[in-house]
Image (cartoon, rainbow, N blue to C red; front, top):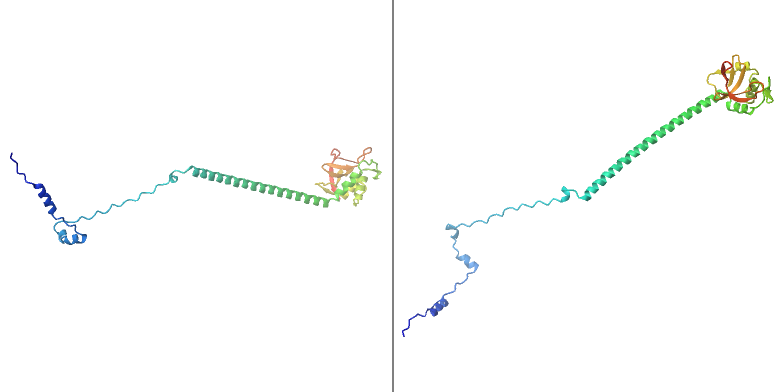
Length: 242
């Protein structure tokens, strides 16, 4: 039996690998020293690192309240409008009250002025007339006294006797007759209470003006002293002041 001659290479290869030197790892300093200074000059150029592109800052998110008011903001706006309307209404009401107060003050001033004028006119009339209030008060006391022709006392009066007696009680002296009293008095067109009232010219009757178209007089037999309306059916009616 023949055998093949097969070289035993496995042990030799293993021995060769074992004998092969292991490359040493150079330190960074050593590696730098072995780099040829001409490395960058033999056609190789290093590429610069690209600059980073600027990053745009993101726009801040707009709050929703800037574009769409919240319900609370709407309520606040409505409340402000309502408050403004209330202030305007209050100002208008205050202006109206002030106008009413001014109008009331003007009315009151006008009324006071009218009363003052009336008082002044009345005072002037009282000065012109012989104490009319006193004369009228005296005349009123003798209402009901009977008519007596030629009478000039509280027991009985005729017309001129009545006026003479009443004015005499007030401190004013009058003539005894109707025509004498008419001549003594100063005619007036604006009679005041206390003036004399004459009927006819020369007068045939006389009384005392009581105001408001009324008079006190002793008229005729059977009719006592009374306060009655002035009658205009018996001739001219004139007024005199003493």
